[in-house]
Image 1 (tube, rainbow, N blue to C red):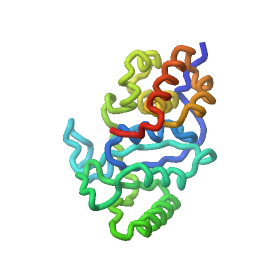
Image 2: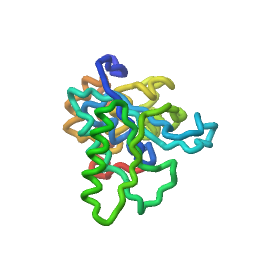
Image 3: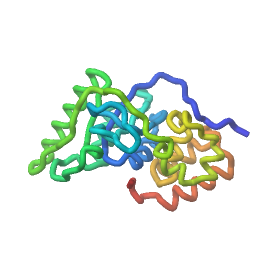
Image 4: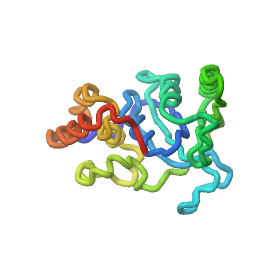
Length: 219
């Protein structure tokens, strides 16, 4: 049996976004070529680590590790703007606010330029996105990591996902997206063998990918 591809040990960069409920964004980015792994959690606040369900003034965010030779930070920013509500008129509670946390000066410049370009398209709306330095990241509880994948209990069990792997596994990130229709069938078929899936696992995921193709990413 082929070994499951949990770990991809290559140089990477980080991107951190607040895009509302993190379950959907975890699926969206997880199935994106060039993304190595994802994890969701809380950041951007002043109140420190969440205490149980009390997250203080932190924001739900996704942390993305990506291979810059396959996908650029600009590509990720395009996905950021295309896949969430960033307008001030939406009046979202702080937990679900729109935020870009930059990890370098280059990221800051690209984020600010992209926000300005987005604002130029919104003649009657204010782009509410905050752009701030990346701060402490507090991982969400295990049941919130790879949420859609974990809904497929037998499949998730077959991947042998530990608490650590829920935040670091490459194959888990991919399947968390494919199962809701993200990524597309052609992409899945091209990399299914590389992911180390059994024939039964591949067919199971294909069935759900086909069923949910085009359904969009929702929380």
